[in-house]
Length: 316
Image 1 (tube, rainbow, N blue to C red):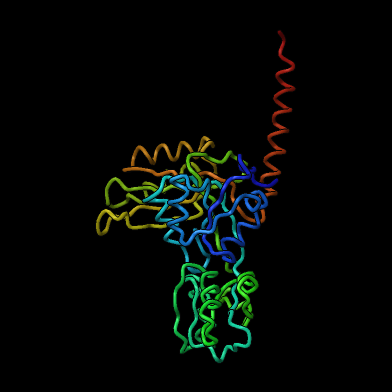
Image 2 (cartoon, rainbow, N blue to C red):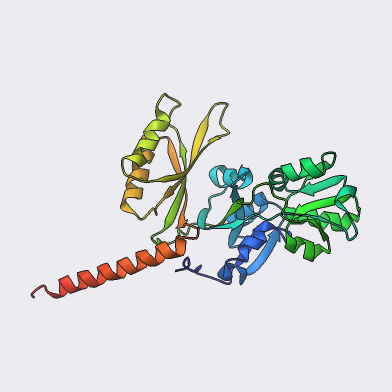
């Protein structure tokens, strides 16, 4: 069973552009989102800001990479800036290629442009094949491809997607150059206020601020989840921007805010820590997601039928 459709499938959705980015590629895996009016924006902060102030109805941005870790523009924007709720997560494998003008060869490249995460994910290839090339960061992989096409310099190449090569008329100089074949990137759909309904295979994201930096404070937070058998899928510390040494914790956990055990754990953390910022409860991605959701749905229907049968035996 697929994640529940958005309440308005024809809304305007902003994403990290231009056309040809991994973000766009991930967005196209979601039929209901791809059918919306898509708005390409120049940066992740702009996508979040435009969503928060209503210029677009929802934003779609990368939040985590299996190799390079957190996408800080997204995570910090959600944690410390805008008031947005994660509606959905999407995970796709990473496939990166070296793109250049027609006729360009790898040996002739002296400059490589791409998003910092993409450059980091291809570090081994670059060290082996282009050890003397200058690396230049761009806002996105597709932006790098566009710049290579615009500059029209045969010594400049981009690390980007195959779709970007098609869009900007570039050749594939080398394919699948990522260092780790199992690499993947996680994206999130964000929107104001609304919380996605539970599906039975969900994830919840929060930011936990410590009341005080004292011995055992992190242990105290973790125990609230451990005693309730709530599994944490991610735990990361980030500076709060309020002073040197002042950190908060970014937490992803299994379950939905409407689950009693999850609500009870977060209620207790909120009472014992300085603050908790709720970032959303949403369907968990992954190959087992549809199967888990189908099993939960079938179990609920069976339980409803069982209860209806029992209630039907009650005498007036």
